[in-house]
Image 1 (cartoon, rainbow, N blue to C red):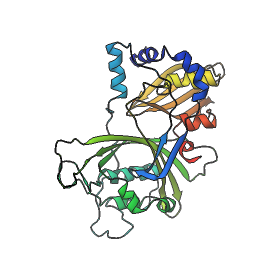
Image 2: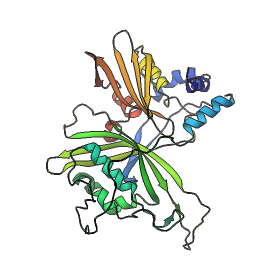
Image 3: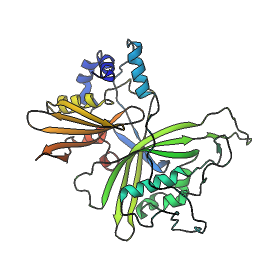
Image 4: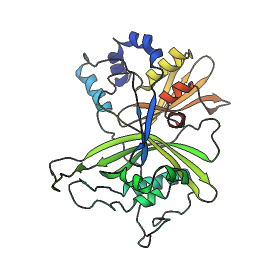
Length: 349
């Protein structure tokens, strides 16, 4: 049995009965957001958590170490090697701001998103902040190029000035996950959703007298969420919306149970839905986890991504039909909004 499963059982052993009794009360964790709050170019959403009060008291040193390494340390994954490298055109004084080597029209939403983060990777908005030196990368020159990749609808919600200001203190951004996300039934054919996780390297504020504290460190922030893309026959693929949740490390996962894929499957699909699933095996690559399960009726697959903070988040649900995996939605609407990283979490108020 994997070490983290042994650790998990020790963590929740004392509280598991209480969790199961209260589990109905935990089915909804509302998602709230204020669309005036924009960070790193995306709307920031927050979640109100109702959690049980488990504790790691009593764990032995090895178990505690395994938990701390998973949940209280940065990811050891490499950043995605992007298809593009940003270099501005000297003559670009007005839109369309198409960087050297970048297509004017994107025929693939994946290329569009990679281009977006390639531009942000080369940008820095350090006015009033410092990273221990003067200029960083291309400074704020790349932001209009990234902004040009947005749809008209997005631009109506967020001005270029607001977009640039959302990166205050940001020295660079790395894309660490990019995966297709669940497409809810009824979604138009020209809309596609993608899961992203980003790593943001931040500077620290300069003192009011203009001097800096060189002993202050830079620091990392992590966000994950959904990018909605939209295809237009004239403009190709454009970014329709960017929505993030901030990753937390303290008090995580010491209070709760929905950070572990096996426990989520057992509580949600077995205890709540009575599906009597048995996990047969798992496949894991680059923190993308495919969980294969079955009952007396069907075979199922659940796809999770393990975030930098150690949280297992659900992306897809499948059932096997005619030897092929068919994507379905098993979760009830409120549970999907709470436990699945999909468009419904952000766009269905």
